[in-house]
Length: 155
Length: 293
Image 1 (cartoon, each protein chain N blue to C red):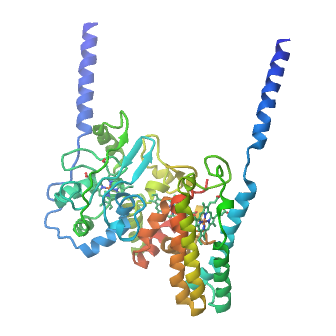
Image 2: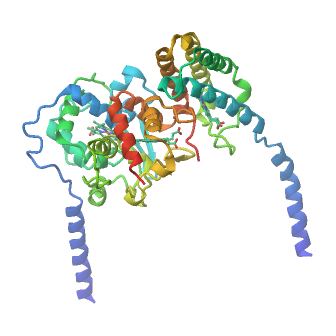
Image 3: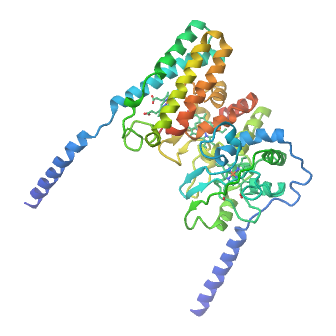
């Protein structure tokens, strides 16, 4: 009898909790979208960086394609990718620091900085290896400036 | 019974005296800096490699602002939060009124001009391995920076860690001017060892600590919990990293990993500093990491 009462209570408690647990969003789609855009940038930077480092031969056309892609990705408006509650303290699977949501204006302006650096790369990409190397410094600086403040190390 | 009690009291007094003695600040020999002339040009390199601006420039300072050493950067640890002080040449709020000998005691022994122990959040455990000429050059360079008229903020540290005297015993255990890599076979490796272990204090972040907060040489550079937030500071031994020498040197210059992710967290500032060194220095650091198994 005692046991049964307990089971009923637990079941009732679960019934109360379950809908809340289901409603809690894990933001899987947003995480995939925002990480995917970073991966596209990394892939294209790999082409430009490889050329700047002399690891792959400079090829103006490929360099231009990579730079154009960087401009395209950094043109994407970001607000839909970063919903409130999708930070590293609230959910698993992300390295986005809660500080992003305390300083959303600064975060957005750092995204605009990387876009500006990508535009410079777009203008320089066909001008040879040295020009790519110089533009790469600014792009790298813009990536690092945001990761510095807003991304946790990997766990 | 009375005898026993007296013995206990006497023993306690001896222990206390021994503890007081063992925790006394140990300065450098009086003539350690005698006759040294600092070269500010060389000192700039020491300043960059030593990463002073990462802590002593105000939080989020960029470009030239990183040379105004007004302090303010907050360092979280399990013992409390430390705030880096003003070390600009301001005579009142900074260290403009110090002598080279006092500066050397702070850098290499963690002792202040008035004889207090510094907390090891100031990485003098690494700087203890510096060469005295480099300390003199650094001192000469620091004098050329702008003075900042800002008072240093207090640390937020609770009992018993707020008793600085106790740090004396800790220092006896953990401050050692011998290198962890005992054998550096080439000139490049020796330079790398000096940069990594003495100046750039990589181990302060990348090596795990024992329960008293000392670096564990048995797990040198094997990665550590992140003191401020989620995630872990990665291992950077040869095997764990799996990067080539040029991958490492490029990362330290550009911030890009071999798969073109970009460095973040507290490593971003380290790279901002190291990117301004000569390429040979970054290559020497890479050689050191590759020699770590």
